[in-house]
Image (cartoon, rainbow, N blue to C red; front, side, top):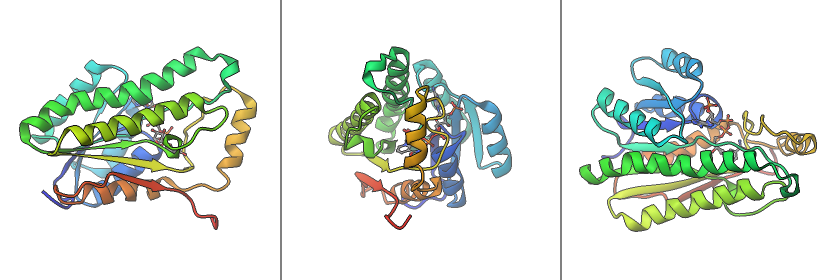
Length: 240
Ligand code: NDP
């Protein structure tokens, strides 16, 4: 199967930012989408705007049962699953010395376990149908480490490793890492350290809009089955 028309695509974290932009981009290309996040009101509004082509279900990616129910509902609605975009993520940055254990745990739960729960929900289905595609949204933080971002970077390094491991273990399943640079979204709204919050505002002065990442995801998804885009890194140019 190649192209986008009629492809059945699951997108997590579809209630804002890169996830929402991806839903809009893939829907414009003719895909049918099953979208999830915790904020049901936002999903309902987006699906209502885009019509029959888009269905939604509340999803907590940290809960394996919630993810399995999400995949089962997508299959019941559209008959199969072709692509999973594991996009949901959180970034409550802080220096390690602040010992914000709850925030470390939340990043590990959403950014790593969330991706693994997604893979667990679709992998048996992809193996049974002999094809499938997992797109994991990592980050440039999968390639570098910055002060205040040690745990976030660790989670994104893990996403990189898990995705490449999936690719190596399965000849008939495509695995793509999409690694954005700075994108203007709601990410980091939950940063509790005021110095780090203002540093983030500084970084965001030169940022992409979420549609730039959505186009990279579309590029990977619309390749033919025999073509696996392993990774796309998208940063803003110096010119902004
Ligand atoms: P947003 O904060 O706008 O979006 C994050 C999404 O994740 C929301 O839709 C949120 O939905 C969802 N989410 C968070 N926790 C859960 C959960 N437990 N279960 C289900 N969904 C959840 O940020 P972005 O669009 O920027 O982030 C998308 C991805 O891009 C993340 O993985 C992020 O790490 C990555 N990224 C972002 C960059 C940036 O500069 N913005 C740069 C590099 C990577 P809800 O709260 O409704 O559940």
